[in-house]
Structures are given as C-alpha cells and as structure tokens.
Amino acid sequence: MQASEFQRAVAAARSIAASVGLTADDAVVLQDSNKLTLRLLPCDVLARVAPAADQVAQTEIELARRLAECGSPVAAVEPRVEPRVHERDGFVVTLWTYYESAPPRQVSPADYAEALRRLHAGMRTLDVPTPHFTDRVGQAQRLVASRDLTPALADADREFLGDTLRSLRRRVGRRGGAEQVLHGEPHPGNVLATKNGLLFIDLETYCRGPVEFDLAHAPEEVGEHYPGVDQHLLRECRILVLAMITAWRWDRDDQFPDGRRLGIEWLNQIRAALDPR
Image 1 (cartoon, rainbow, N blue to C red):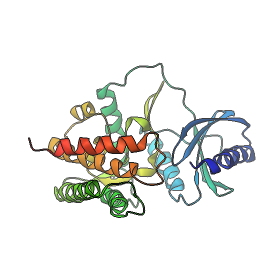
Image 2: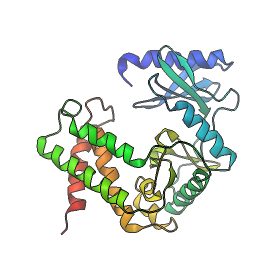
Image 3: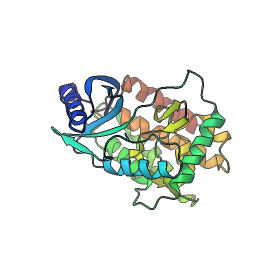
Image 4: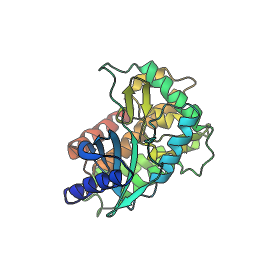
C-alpha cells in the first residue's frame, strides 16, 4: 500500500473494529502489498484493508463462508461480527479469524496436495459467476503491451514476454481438459500452517480453469502427490504462471519487495524453461 495511505488504512481498520464492538488499541502489520493485512489487538482479529475500488471483497467473504460450511480447508471470517465488507475513509475492510501458526515445520508436499485436493472438491460444489483463468492472463498481457504501465521493461524483453503469454495462453486453453472453480493463487504465501492443519487464504483470485493452473503456483513436488494430474499441462501452466508474475514485477506501481530484481531473474528462468536443448 502507498506510504501516503498507510496510516489512514490502519486508522480505518481500528475504527471499524471499534464500531462493531471489538477493541483494537493496537495493529500489527502482517503483510503490506496491494492490500494491508493487520492483526488487531487485543481483540485478536485479522483485518484486510484495500482501496475502495476493490470490488471482490464481498465475493471473497461469501466464498469463504460457503467453503467452510462444506468442510474445505479455508480461513474463516471473524465469527463475532456480521460477515460483510465495511467501508471507511476510502477503504474496504474485511474481518477474519486470526490463526496462531503451528510449531515451525516444513509442510510436506503430500499434505499440501491433500489440502489443495480438498479445497478443489469444495470449490466444485460452488455455482457462482467465475472469471476464466485466461482473463487473468489477459491482464498480464495488457501490462506487457503498455509502455506507460511497464516503462522499465526493455523492448526485447517486452516482445519475448508478450509472445510467451500469448502462445501459452492459447496452448493451455486449447487442451480442452476439465475445468472447475479454482483458488487462482494457492502459493505457499496463501497457505497457513495452523494447529487445525493447512488453511488457504486470499480467495479474491478465484477463477475457472484446469486444476493444473492452481498446482502451477505450488512447489513442484506438490504436483507429484495430487491425483490425476496431466504433467505436460502442468509444465505449461508453470511457465505461464511464471510469465504472469514476471509481468506483475514490471508494473510501474508494483510494491513487491525486490520486485525488479525478481523480474529480471524470472525472465531468465522463462528463457531457460523454453530452451529446447
């Protein structure tokens, strides 16, 4: 979140918590990117704060509620308040259960795959209007195509990244495999290791597509434990996802730590992955 907005965002979260009867004398920053994630104390609630232009927050709450009802491994909304989006001072704020982390340990690929399988099983029960994964690829393509939005991207890299996104979007979409509602970004940063097992967070990226698109965000070993995976499709999805997140790193407004260095590094990884040798 922009530094100029940070204090107002924190104040909005604390004010909203107080308005629904939760004491929030302090706020601990857990994550600061396009959204601000806070642990409010002493009420011990997790607050997610985003600019008011964010229009998917209510859908995210509804997805989490319905998935929790069918036993899917997702973080729950805060049970002490009404599950809805709050607006204050140009921000939307949602309130969630705060989970203490389990004792440090490496999450096994088998556990990760099983949790993702259970999440997908729950998502198959959802009947909601869902954007297609190619819509998200299209967002990356528009970034790469615009010199105004990605001014630091060299012409040769722009052409290479644009061609990669276009060809892989077409190839993955052309395979015609089964599609379903997906998390959209079930990478390790969106998985909580809790005493209740692994829980997925950040459902705002939900989309429709093959499960291999979700698996492409997880560590490689996870795909070896997920049943019925098309390994060739998974490989193409991995390169496609890498190309997408590379595009985000060249966005002039990107706030990801060390993002430009990663953008260069990932361009090299894409070239190596596509090298036929």
